[in-house]
Amino acid sequence: MNKLFLFVFIASCVLFAGIGFAQTRTKGSANRAEVREEVSGKRNTSVAAAEAVQSVREFIKYLFHQKPDIATDTNAQSRWLSEAMRKALANRQTVYAAYAKENPDSPEGPPSNGDFIGSWDYPTSFRLVDSRLSGQRAVVDVQFAWGKNTNYPGDKRLTSYILVRESGSWKLEDIYSFEGKFVSAGSLLETFRGKSYP
Image 1 (cartoon, one colour):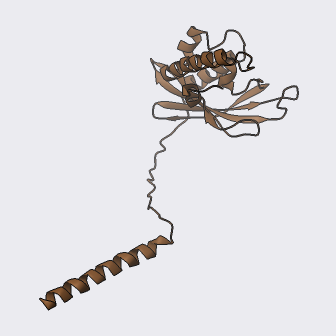
Image 2 (tube, one colour):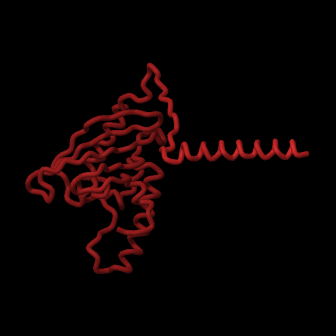
Image 3 (spheres, rainbow, N blue to C red):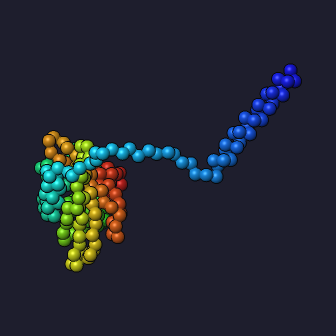
């Protein structure tokens, strides 16, 4: 019995010492996970379809008019916006109506074409920088530039228009704005889905 007790005691000491050693060994070091990069000869992306790029070009030109406005122009919404973006825009309009009711003196306006450009002060020019196709999505990168007679003279902003294939056409699913001097990084779709305004 004493030999069995001694064996259990020694085994327990070894086990607990091993656990303590393992904990002290990793306690001071950062946890790291191994990651493996999959390399293949074929790229998963390619240049976006010309139709997707043209759709972004036409959409931006449409946005440079104050009237008609995408927020109220249901034909334009059907032509250019995905179902997810149309629902998010409707949500944004509802949230704005509640905000405007509670804040009648606020200078904030309802959703408009400017939201899809990312600025209330329109840029003087835009340039299609790059495009890519990844699965069922096309991404078109656009650089907007503001000239000297604007509120942001010399500013240039990179914006990615993300399109998805719906009903046989390329439709705007989201717009991603990158961090800049006068703009925060963000997703228009997520902003429109939000429950607060502005």
